[in-house]
Every structure is written in structure tokens, then in C-alpha cells.
Length: 273
DNA sequence: GTCCAGGATCGGA
DNA sequence: TCCGATCATGGA
Image (cartoon, rainbow, N blue to C red; front, side, top):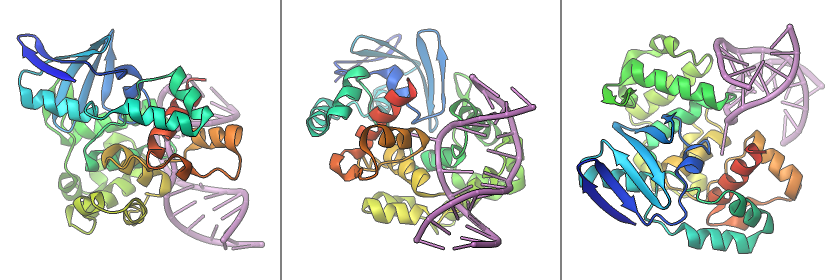
């Protein structure tokens, strides 16, 4: 990885086999819009227009090193995924095949509250509509940050607004879950900083205290928002994969400590047919 | 119109 | 403990 800044924006070279498209399109994040060969992305209160050419990423609208470092961290470009993929490939031939057929997926390092809230919205929902609802939540409570995006609202902003104020985002029964999460996080009942320092199992249990958060939503939040790469979310697609290739005796611990990375490859390949 | 979506909760067996 | 109905909404 090699970061430089010029008049047009930031440039990050030597990103290995990182794939911007596969990483964004693998269902981890919902605040991005495809713009021809580029992606307009938002995370927290950051935004950028990003293109990839070979192993180099270009960030339009990113004019200083701090902002470039934010995106480098967001895409987890400092981690050696080659090593992880090699380890997983040696562990399991099926995962090896998934990695080979769609390489370059990184696990994003998203902001914890934003990730938790986004995956509460994701339950029993499809990705295009999840994106719409998340963007709607931001435009309702956030501030303009450019590229047509709004910042992700803090938990206390949503908590103070009240559950009725959420109705315009059309999240249906999930509104009460979003509100419960916002209240617990805002008043400190759930301390996301403490969750971040917990062991995986305890962290899952802590997040499940929130109404509307079960194993799957908790696992997604911990994987994509807390850097817990061993979390293994099981949704309908991963259930298909397990039934198809592994059977009832499947145990995700076989991929430890990178079960989440394996899961993401299996999920992506299955969803792309 | 029907089926389904990166599920979780609830009530009843 | 297990299982099915139910939950809002709209994409495909």
C-alpha cells in the first residue's frame, strides 16, 4: 500500500488483489451508488468518488492525508489478505474455490453504530431496499456531506427524535428495533466501546439484548463494524451453502480465526450464482 | 398477482 | 425446546 495526494485527489497504489467492486457489492455496506466506472461512497461523515485501475485506487474529493488514511483503514488495505486467503484455501477446498472464482474481497472496517443500525434494517429485507432505507435515514437526520450523501445519524439523535419520527424511512416493523437500539446505545445501557473489547460470544450476547437483534444481525455488526473476523453470520444464502457443500455437521470454527472472511466468500459466490 | 428478502419474536404445542 | 405464524414493505 502506497498513499499519495495530488490536485485531483488521493491515490492508493499497491493494494494487492483488492477488489473495490466485490468488496462493496458483497452486502457489507449500503451507502454507495454506482456511477459508471466509479463508486460514490459514504461512511460515517466521509464521502468520496472512488475508481479502481488495476491495483490502484483513486479517490476524487479526498484532498488530505488524514482523509486518505480513513479510506485506507475503511477498506482494511493494511491487512495481508493474501495470507488469510492462503490459510483458508489450505483449510477447505470449497472455500479455496470460492476465493479463486471471486478474489479480492476485504472485510470493511465500518463504524460500529452505523453497522449495527444498518443490519437491524437488513433483517428480512433485500439489499436494494436496505440501501434505500439507510440512505433515507441519513437524509432524514444527518447533515449534507457531498456527493448527494448525508452523515449517518448518531444514536442519541434518533433516540431524541422518537420512534414516530422514523416512519418516513418506511422501514416497517424495524422502526421499533432501530429505536430500541438507539436508546440503549445513547443512554449507555449498551456500550459499543465495551462490546468492541469483548470476546466474540460475549459480544454477540450483549448485542442480542437489543430488540430485533439475533445471532445473524449481531454477527454481521461484529464482523463488518467491530473487526471481529471470526464472526460467522448465517443468512438464507449461507444456509444454502451449508446444505449444499457441508451438511448438518458443519462447524464454522473450522475456519477460525477467519470464519467471517470465509463466510463472505461463500456468501458472495453463492449469490452471484 | 406471487414470491421473497444478509430475521427476529411470539405463542402454542 | 421446537415450530409455525406473523411482522411492513417493496424489489424482482
